[in-house]
Amino acid sequence: MDKTTVKVASVQLNLKQCFTESSFYAFIENVFKQSEADVLIFPEDISFCLAWVKEDTIQSLSLKSSLENFSTFILSRINLNKMGNWISEPKIERIIRRTFQSLTKKYNKVAVAGSIYVQRPKGKYNSSLVFDNGEFVGEYSKQNLVPLEISWGIKGDYNSNPIQTSKGNIGVCICYDLNDPNVCMKLKKNGADYIVAPSSGWRPYPWYPFNRKTECPQIYRAVENDIIIFRPYCCGFIFPGLFFQGHSMIVGKYGEIIKESNSIFKQELLSWNVVLDN
Image (cartoon, rainbow, N blue to C red; front, side):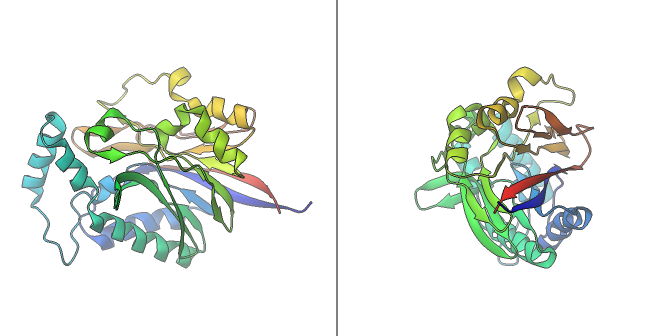
């Protein structure tokens, strides 16, 4: 049987606030330029980069009032559903789609665009959009939500079908989904060539304790399913009070840690080759 090798990269992304679509495009394009990988896997909550982005037809809040409103949302439990509406503004999805369609075509790559909060007819979801050489090819929505997401009015979805791309069938799940053995089992059973798990890594403060035994379920899922798993995290501060502790990792079929990020603060690209059966 013929085999094909594709290079897949976990992108540990140092999030930053982008107040215009062009600045976000330049920020993401820099990653595309740096990597020779065929497939780029971005982390969960990439939409936080666009929390106060200005789109031509929408008037954005001032930075001062936006920060005040953000603090109010985070530090209290009032209007949490309104917070869910704010982080899932349709303009964010529009910008994500335009950016990744353009860049995957320009650089002839596949990209799993982390995850963003999206509005659909049945509700709000934490979803990962996948693009292949300029084309939108599929979407996966998080199944196992954290309590804060539930309070925001986010819903879970239960589709475990891999997304077909020119670089293999990608089994996409998001962060806490790795804690559920059934998610990866179904992805592998349904034909996934490898599994990717965009994650955020929010922490109350830097150097918050990291428990490798409980916070690396990808090791167990890889062994259980005889499959490689790529798990990228965010890293560093996006603004004061919101820190992401990068612990990005690539795990092999036997549970071996193939690659792991060197820093919890710095942006890194972790790449590895996956062999596909044609």
